[in-house]
Image 1 (cartoon, rainbow, N blue to C red):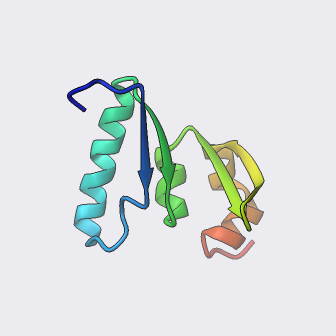
Image 2: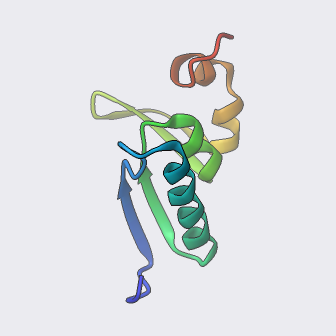
Length: 88
C-alpha cells in the first residue's frame, strides 16, 4: 500500500482463516476501499463479499451469469437460495 495503488486484487483473502481473522481482514479491505482504492475481490464467502462490495458478479464455469449492485444481490431471493444457503 506504500506505492498508493489505484487497484488491489484479492483472491480468497478469507481462505483458511479463523472467523476473527476474517473479520479483521475485511475491516482492512473496507478501510482501503474507503481511501479510494478500487478492489477486485474474489471470495467464496458470498455473504461477506456482498456485504463489503458495491457490485457483485457471479461466475459459473468461467462465465458471468449474474451481476448487479451488491445490496440488490444480497436481498435477491434466488441469490439467497443458490449462494447464501437460504430458502426462498
